[in-house]
Length: 116
Image (tube, rainbow, N blue to C red; front, side):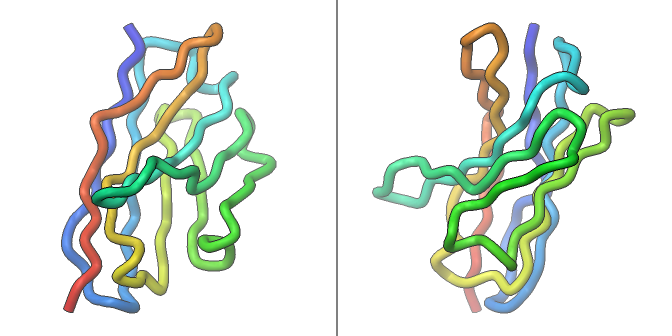
């Protein structure tokens, strides 16, 4: 079955960096686009950005452009989210997602807390 497992979250100071990983299994990872989302306390889940199946193209929400980078390693069935210049408002649970045959699959999420 499809499984997505995020890791790499934690506590980081403002201005710091983190790299999140999402390990995928149960499907042919290399032919699917992948997305990252986040959900802050009391807020709706929002799109961070996405990457095409080959990794040749990415897109990001405006508030994350220039600070966040999505990449993938199809040999490792893993998608990454590099986050730089983190701000307190980036505090959220971060999720990866794949849409396969019309079904949205989510990981369990990883908590990112940006605080001094």
